[in-house]
Image (cartoon, helix red, strand yellow):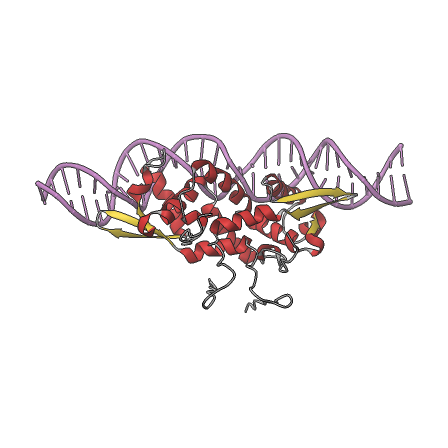
Length: 126
Length: 126
DNA sequence: CTATAATTTAGACCGAGGTCGAAATAGGGA
DNA sequence: TCCCTATTTCGACCTCGGTCTAAATTATAG
């Protein structure tokens, strides 16, 4: 590997996205660019056992069950979650590889483990 | 791959997002959840000098100048880019802190160099 | 001051998408 | 079997947002 790519910044800012990459990533991002779906994703991912059934999710929203089901379908179609029916309930779980892919887009490459200087942690406050 | 990744996952999967956090983040994500805006962001960020003028961007698309201007405004309103007029041209640059914030949402914490046990980082919100 | 170029604003069009109520599908239990 | 609950599908409504043309704004040049 050509080791020293001058690690300036996140992949998105390192070289221009191709049109097809942009289209594909935009599809993923559209799936999470909704407050309800963000919360659903977060609730599923942080739920005990790594999975949550629809019944665990619906109550947190002032939305009807069909609407929640619609949002879950959007997330599943995008490949961000996977659902499995076990008996009466359907359980959803996050697919971490796909979530990580989103993060990698906007995240500067991690510093190589051994650091020769203070680690730069930046806390962004709104 | 050993299972040594102690920290379970990305922030979004660690604990449920609050409603207001979700709304704010969804706003940011909506701004990038478009193929044209993704490419604009990428072209600006990867352009020599860290900035690009509108004239550098327009030609890459089959879109009219007003449409490009609209997308740039969306990105700027979201806080992802900043624009400055210098003479005839307007130059845009990425605001990396905001881009990184998006990445951090979906990215598992970097492995701490040394640790003897799970590190408990607690963010205390007022 | 006038002409020209770069960029943004305004307004309109139209398809995409979030929401709902009603109905369909799938399982479990009396 | 029939019914009850959980979840999804369907169809409709209405808002949001991407795109365009036309016009306004800002700056430079002559």
